[in-house]
Structure formats: C-alpha cells, structure tokens
Length: 435
Ligand code: ADP
Image (tube, rainbow, N blue to C red; front, side, top):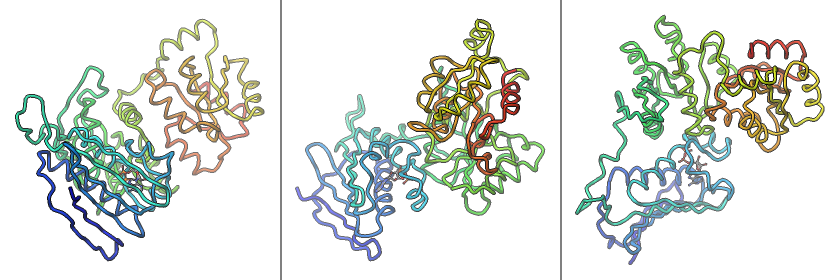
C-alpha cells in the first residue's frame, strides 16, 4: 500500500506533497492522536535547522504507522533511552537554545499507551531522528463492540480545581496546590502527577490569574513557573510576599529558565521553598519536594528517624556520613569529627547514597564535584528516599563564591560549608543540625 507522505523540506520554504490517499479509516481518539503527532512533528521542526521533516503514514497489518523523520541535530546513542523520561532534555545547551519543558515525549508515550499503541525512536547524532507512532486500526476497550473514543482516559480538564484521586500510598491528602504555568503539556503532566497522589490542583495560566486565585482562596502551596507572558513568576512572587495572607505561602519554583545569580538571590530573598529545573527532576523527586512543602511545620526539636535514634543510644555517638573523593580532605574531616561522631565514609556520590541507605546516618556531609555521581545527584537520590528524606545534608565544597552558595542552597541542601573547612564552623553547623 502506498504510504501517504507529507514532506516539509527546508523548513523555511515549506514544501508539502501528499502521495497516496488509500489509508484506512481508523477508530481511535482524535485528541490524543493529534496531541501525539503535534509533539513529534513540533520536535522534528524545532530540532531541525537544515534539511527537512518528512511525515509518512502507512498501514502495516492491523496497525497504522506514522513516521516523523527529520534531518536535524539528532540524539546521541547514550541519551536516546532517556528521551521519554519526564522533564528530560538533551544537554543544557541544546535545551536552552531550543526551549521546551522535557515533558512532551513523556506525555506522548503515555497517550500512545492509552491508545494501545507505541512510540519508538531511532536517531543518529548530527544526522537526524525518526520517530514512529504505531497504533491499532481499531482501539478495543474491554467489553466494547466498537471502540468508543476513550474520553475517560483523558486527564481531568486542567482548568479549575482538579479531581482528587487519593490512594492509600498517596502523599497528598487533599491539600490544595496552585500551579501557575502557561505551558499546556506541563499543566497536563503536573495535573496528572499531583492529582494521582491525592493533591487538589488549581491551575492559573498566567501571573494575573494566579494573583486573583490566591486572593479568592488561599492554597496550601504554589508551584510557580517563571517565564509567563505579562505578569511573570518573579512579579507574582513579589506580589504575594507583599500581602500578609500569602507572605509565608510555600512556593516551589519549577522552571525551564536558566536562572541568573541576581534572579536566584531575588528568589531566595523572597523565601522560595525550592528551585527545580524542569529538565532536571524525576516524578519521585518532584513529589518529594511537594510533600516537603505541604508537610506540617516540624517540631522545634525534630524527631530523629527511629533507626538513627536506636543507633545513637547504642553507640552513644551520632553517626555522620562524609562523602568526599579527595583522600586528604577525607582524612581531615575524619580527624575533626571522630572524637564526637561515628564517622562513615564514601568516596563518590553513588557510594554515599548506598552508605546512607544501609546505615541511615544522622547527618550527611557531601562534596559537590565528585566522580561517578556528584553531590547534587546524590542529594536528589537521598531526598527521593522515604527513609532519608529528613536527614540533614550539608554541602562541603570548594565553590566559595556567594552565588554558588545560593545555588547550592537552592538545590535543597540544609547548609553549606566552604573548603578548606573551618573546624569551629563545622562543629557549630553539626551541633545546630543534630541537637
Ligand atoms: P522538549 O522538546 O519540551 O524539551 P520532549 O519530551 O518533547 O521535551 O523531548 C525531550 C528531549 O528529547 C528534547 O529536549 C530533545 O533533547 C530530545 N528530542 C526530542 N525530539 C527530538 C528530535 N526530533 N531531534 C532531536 N532531539 C529531540
């Protein structure tokens, strides 16, 4: 059967040609199909500076296969397995140049699954990519003679308060989150992630809407995008901090924007809970950050996790894990700490996370730049682990510049010490966090 082919060649002077019109009618959901194709074609055009984009459709047995082929920048073989992950984008340079949220393909694959189809990708770096969306000619739902469009499978309409779908394991218990976001795929995905965990979601599409929404009913927390038309995230933050009712509203910044040092210090000065880069977070990490945000304020003297308490009683000394790849620094830290604390050691982030999981220390001190897994990824893994979520983690790093400190704290560390470590400052920081 002749495939139907639509070609965009030389993106500037778009040339389209349709070949063959003998494709079968399919019974599926037009909204989901359109959403998937928009994403694949949008990406192909976005990531192609020269050459073109070809869209072809053909019947293959009981399936319709749509291929979107481009001659764009391509994707490196080691990155290809990750492109369907939520918030994933190729290296920062290309995502910054091309923009986006890193959510499109994750949603597209999910929708393809709902349509009992699949999306696959092949790519050669520097040469181009081919994405294939295959779907059954007739979507079959159990018990349905002729497949109706799976409207029920669509996520709840993102505008207004979303449906709460609490589950026994859900982190949220109906807390109201105001999502301030103008990007539709991000709204759909966040709505999906948060409502499935029992949060009630209200969406504001721009800063103005957000300010009206918080004025009408105070949410439990806000997730704020920075780049929005007219009133942007910075202005929203400034406005809500200026109002008594919202001065202490927990705010999580979720942005694809590269935040400058000045902007970061503005955000910190306006008491944001955490800054998360969209291309840089998993579903579990995002949920952990939201759970921390809406958690009730900790008691003045935080309870230690039961295992840590038992160990402390047993050994008489709190357990401190030091994650550091430089043997001299490690030796120094050991010398400074071993009289007062039981010291565990790891020489890279991954080993540090393993040690933390195995021994549940009372506190973790970690270097940032390390082989295998750096301190930021280690922190993320620690925060994503239920048993370690409340363990204080201090960054110990050579980056002594003010902006770096702010960046480090914005990643969610509980504190910061610069190298070479000052013995008094170290002891003071540990005492404060442990006692
Ligand atoms: P976004 O495009 O919003 O960043 P997607 O989930 O749609 O998010 O894509 C994830 C990443 O996969 C992109 O950031 C890009 O690095 C890579 N990618 C997707 N499609 C293509 C393509 N056609 N060519 C090159 N890279 C692509």
